[in-house]
Length: 151
Image (cartoon, rainbow, N blue to C red; front, side, top):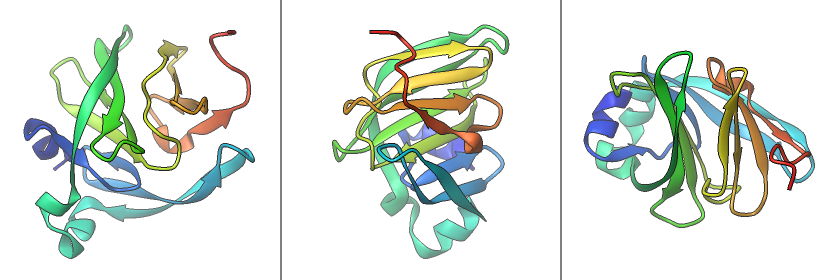
């Protein structure tokens, strides 16, 4: 399901995390500025597509950074979506199959830095929010107050 979007040059514009198997974690609340933990509600991509067409849910994007994940030989990609205030991070395997994608509009594009360390993705946004995303459990993402690049 998720792969259909990627192969059409778009990602699902669903505020939250969409998985290859169609599971979706919709963003409920949480805030980087106040360090309030993120909370999600679980649903499915098929359920969301009942209310919105593929075309209405599709977001064009620009890739700014791609980093190889040595353990899986896959890669993590991040960048900006079509509205300018939106960003995305996604993980794809070595065969270019998207495992999950994170779409958000509250922290601006992910375009500055990206690194992977101990199966944790560290990525920053244009407005200097720093996210820590477990590569195999992205729904456990958090904001980190310390700049992981130490600058």
